[in-house]
Length: 301
Image 1 (cartoon, rainbow, N blue to C red):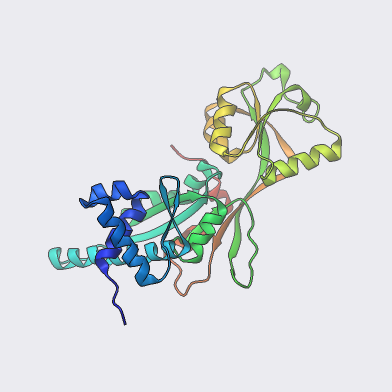
Image 2 (image 1 turned 30 degrees about the horizontal axis):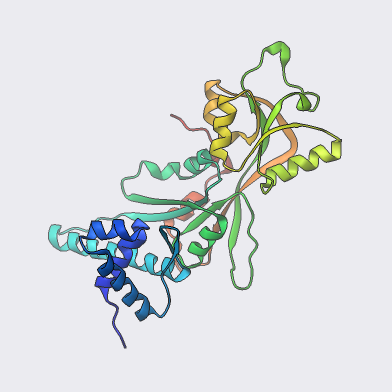
């Protein structure tokens, strides 16, 4: 039985982390052609490709994600062995790898991991991407958890464990208005330019349905998929944004933005998606046991 070449694996690990062959070659002090040759040999030993090329960037295949997860563990164990033999002690650090949809509220993500941020014994690996990309990494245990605002149904091939960890109303927010001109919903809806999530977002679907059922019209200024950008546009323009309040929690607290109204019967749900494992990281259990109010709590900074 052929043995794994750890030298090749280390080269693969470096390229996977850099996402670029040229940068990895410079970091490793080897030629690009030599590095490429070593990666091909590793792929031949595995019997399947580890990368696909997208423009000038190398993207991991499903096999590549699995190989990266194992290589991270292998090299972390090697570093731990060196520390143990050299210094006579083992550093007790826990690692938790969390993926979040690229369009998910950054404030929500920060609120979710906040209990771990001050712990010296914890290392967090926070990744973002599309839901499909993140589920592919979760499937091969390259990450421990996916945060999403979409429910993912379990299938025979993918028995996802999808649990709702928070739910909150959705509001219309904008710059503070004079008290004598308080916003009235739905009467004033047609009189203000709106910033709305993209049409693939469940919030947008629900809002359009409410408007259709009530015969309401609105002025659309922009459709924005990214919640971070939606937050900036709401802060820096005269438009009114449709958002969960967690997205603009800091602006609401400082008074930069004001909540005009809570849209009736419209909510955003936040989900934690995991897969069945023989060993679930204790840190994950700690985060998932938190009350919903804590997950949505404003930062104390």
